[in-house]
Amino acid sequence: MSGGSVAELYLSDVRRRMRGVKALGDGALAQLREDEWHTPLAPDGNSAAVLVQHLAGNMHSRWGTLRDGYSAGTEGESAVRNRDAEFEEGTQDGAALLKRWQGGWKIFLDALDHLNPEDLTRPLTIRGEVHTVLEAVQRQVVHYSGHVYQLILLVKTLRGPAWQTLSIARGGSAAYNAAMRAEPGQGK
Image 1: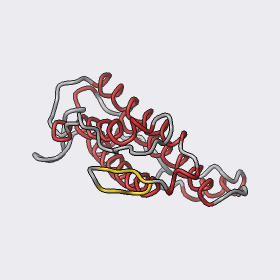
Image 2 (image 1 turned 90 degrees about the horizontal axis):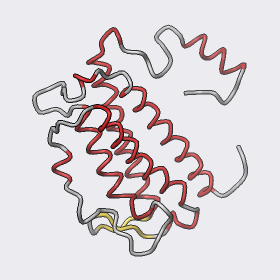
Image 3 (image 1 turned 180 degrees about the horizontal axis):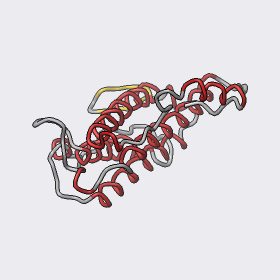
Image 4 (image 1 turned 180 degrees about the vertical axis):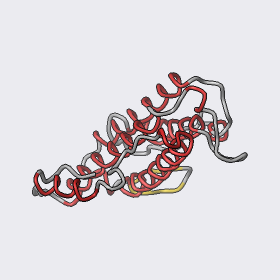
């Protein structure tokens, strides 16, 4: 582990981990057939399209103004955001939804990349509630990870036996662990 302040280590770690969460979502979405984007698992459940719309909407709202770095007085909820509409089933095709997905993640990851250690203790307001930037980032780490894992479960269920694992395949732990010992730092 390299030296540096806890804040520097945190930013490095959260940037890497959130890129990993995005990669898991990318892997799940890549397995969807066009006719599955708007298929929920339950009558009131979210489809992959809805999850993508919501995540992208949240990322644009929360991080759009921080995309180029922290600025005092930033509100982490865009006045033009229509959160309720994010949960309405639309008609966009997979290509359009992937574009939204990529755009939302670009904004969020750009914002993370532009934060510096001093920013983590600065205030950021979300819907009138004051957070530190660190608290706001952690709030989104949990939120985004939760929805990406919902997405994975949804796509895995839809794909059934055709699902391609995004992690260590069943029965593959011993081989994976042996490879890790041979080449440290490559873990999932």
